[in-house]
Image 1 (cartoon, rainbow, N blue to C red):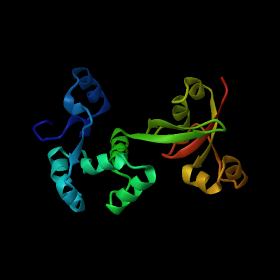
Image 2: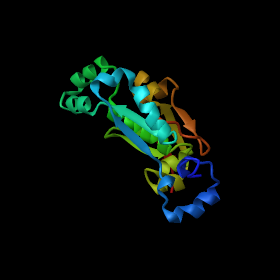
Image 3: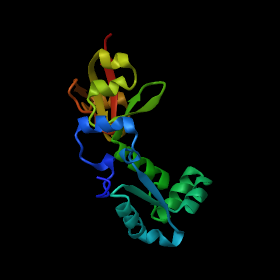
Image 4: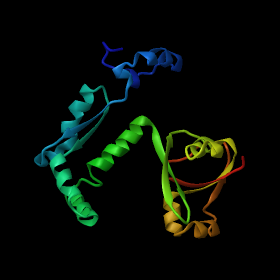
Length: 192
């Protein structure tokens, strides 16, 4: 595999083969990602700079960023920073792009819980069913899972509140087989 330039983490090995290789802690079995520092004058053509690096890394995730601009943007307040990044066509900024790419590469997703005291984000593996996602909060939630009240983040924001979303019939009851989606807002029912 190494001769063909394919890293182990990007290969299509069977699970049992991966398990045999795990004790050797091979570097190519670790997911790889690169950040390429780009000059401000090259921002219009980021992809042509990033593409050769991506190819040299065997298709790994590569994020292009002008670190100098990002460092200047950090010193601004949130509104000024957003205006600056938007004016330069950088959208959310390099950190947000890096985090999205890392989550995608690692197969991670986020769901939210909200209540009177706090709203919190929880990270889970893509493809997790509701009980496993609930287990991220506490193992008792997974063990005693009954159901989850679920709504997408966008629908909740549009409704304005959890109570209003329920009133509008936007909150769904999901069972043990529900595959949690990125950005779901959930309230778990459990009994231990």
